[in-house]
Length: 408
Image 1 (spheres, one colour):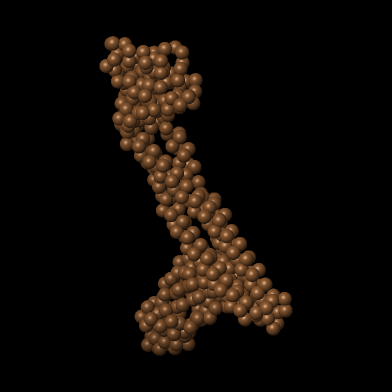
Image 2: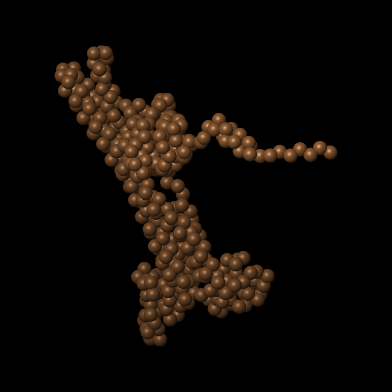
């Protein structure tokens, strides 16, 4: 069908279908279902004028309905070499063959029935379609995550803008110039971010539309259950599915920076009343590790580590990152006292001392958002007995043992 559409639109190749009634190799425009021939415009007109052919069903190719395509596909299941109905599928040559082809040219090949060949090809294409379909939820999740990042970024800019205004109001006079400059910088940065976010969302929508279109085309082909047609478009589908399975590089190109306005003490800073501090930390990519994250011993020091990361998964640090840790007992609902040591390089050491055994939940957040894997489940065991008590117990047990010495 692809060759026919190309020939109809004038984009066909040398071996594309030509008019079946003349030798002028004109572009085909019509199809006669009774003759099973494609016709050029001149031959179609002559076809209608002949009394013997007036009852034939001649249709313009550009106005084909699904039923017309199915009728053509059914008639096309004929071996061009032997003019016999195709009955088998050659797995080596990947073509449909007739009985004579199977005996004369494909005797040593692996030949199966058309039904088995159709089942195999449908299975292969359906698997590819499933792989492409699996991309849809991931892309939708990426889009949802992108919207959340944009909301967080906008909120941080709004809060920073408010902080700028408050500082400016406290320093009437020269501070007004500073306010205007900082606000303009924030607005430009916001405009830049909005443009990046909008472009990425547009690219995501385009990607989803391409997937839906390709899957729809694949489903239409499979529903017609025609192996020659499937074989005809298989390479096109394979190439398209491979393109759709490629990772979306544009998701990594968006900079998810956050902004916060840090006011300076004007009594100590002479030239600038404040500055803008950005954070590239992504809470969902931030990780925590260490024994103290899942296991602990009552009345003993326990620790684990938190590493803040950016959108590329690399360690990052910003002084406005607010790391929050809450360890709460599932039995008493009471929180444990937690200490956080900031090494100012993206690594934080969290320490705590559980007073009793039990099960706890550890909630870790960065700027109010849960990190990857949070909340974590912590199990605290009873403290082990001291070695002195163990030795004392051992002596009591040995005192009741009688030793026999045999002298030969």
